[in-house]
Image (cartoon, rainbow, N blue to C red; front, top):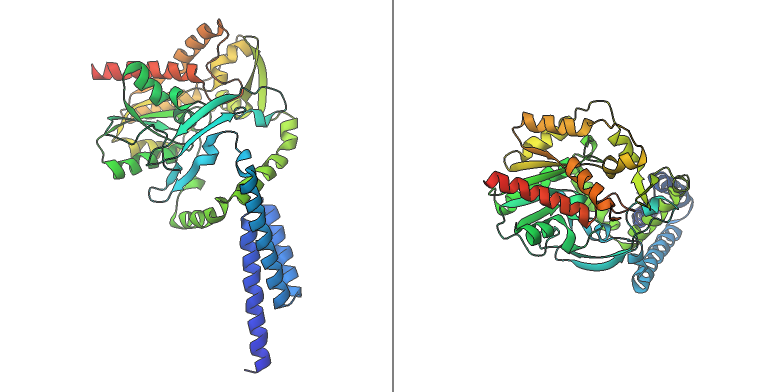
Length: 405
């Protein structure tokens, strides 16, 4: 092979390497797939037209700009200003047990300016509150590490206590008000994740525990086949998190997502508001639709997740949407179907499990508290507040007391 050919091959490899570098730099920006694909094509055409030195210079420039951008975000503190609550700030992934967790041994104290519904509307519904999050060494929201508690709470953000300070979450209220020491094994996720929490916990601490599973009507009754954690999926996720864990990714991704959904927010497609007890209360329209669902459901993967936890499941609790609890104040006389509860109860009966519906206790308590101007849900959030958690704690304590007797 001639010297000229060797030189051309060398330049091609340099150009290819430079192209791969710039693509990896772009991954750090959390761009929508369409925009990322467009930039991939444009950079490909550009690098095809320039020589090796120019391609290397461009890639180096992009990397330097990205690093400077990240440094500015860190020095100015802007990297944390995108978070209105600790949940997303602390969320990460446990590759050993294949499920999401929080950053281990973290403690965060902050003022939440609003709940999760305020970013979805231009209406002023914000309820600022101070919250403290304490995460144990296993990656879940507990004041201390697991110390052999018999009962383990399993679920998503309702059990985590999203929007509430540590002293008001379910595990804390059970310990303080009823003397029931439980471990909080919860994180935002799906039924598949809950099953992974239980199996991972079993691997880490043995199987001598009883799980109390909490299933939320709003987003737990869905298929998650596309979320199956194959070996390739785990590798890709782990590799991608090299970039998605950077402040550049988190800030840019957040800003792009807000810009994309701006028109939908303006049109109030995400939430509906109603005056309840003299206050404006927001409801997630997606959860309203689920609550009004009339067609029966059959979710094979949902049932498989329940079955996989069966050996440790002691009881299952159904959490209704806030719309189900307050709909009579919005549409008097409206009769709602009970598709989600009926299905969950059917699955529990099939698996020989005890199941409790929290709807009626929450409705009764909400009616009484409303006379005092108190809600059981945050007005600007899809999650219950400490008063709603207190209702659940009372029911759970009663169930455990009855089962012990």
